[in-house]
Length: 204
Image 1 (cartoon, helix red, strand yellow):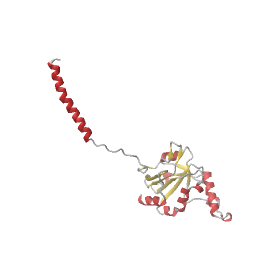
Image 2: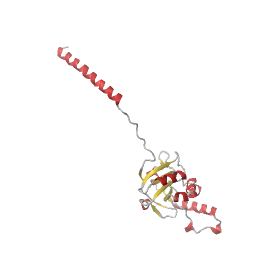
Image 3: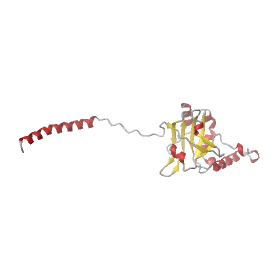
Image 4: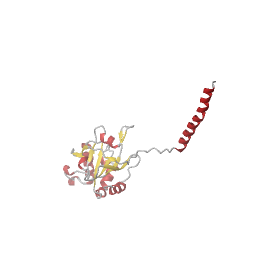
């Protein structure tokens, strides 16, 4: 080996050592921030929709934005609203929800006729046949909306199990600006009316 090659090798050794030392120092001093996990309660705009209620009237979310706080509830409508514990809780505690000046919208994949039938069944249980109100008066204190086009609204809100291809029950608190401020998604826990009332009172 010539003297020139030997000299170059001797110069490369300390240079390589400096590079290795710098890399080790970088690894030892580098800060690794934990990944930020997305939460169901991350603030985001509430997806717009227009759906038919139990009387086949169109309800548009846009009409409420800028004017009202909203409680948007996705319930399991397969057995009818009259057999939904979630709908029953909304109905029984509606006065508390209404006191927050919020609008309640309940959504399922049931058809308007199915929601209307369940409503009529429940009203007939509550009142004798002779005292039953006319069909035009048979209403919940909030609309029962039908998301029957491939669960489109469920999917856009995240109230859908993509693996099982099934809708999920969920509750969303939306402020007047149309932002989802709180979200509760099954099966992790929907909370209860007391939770939703507190959250509605906190948002603007």
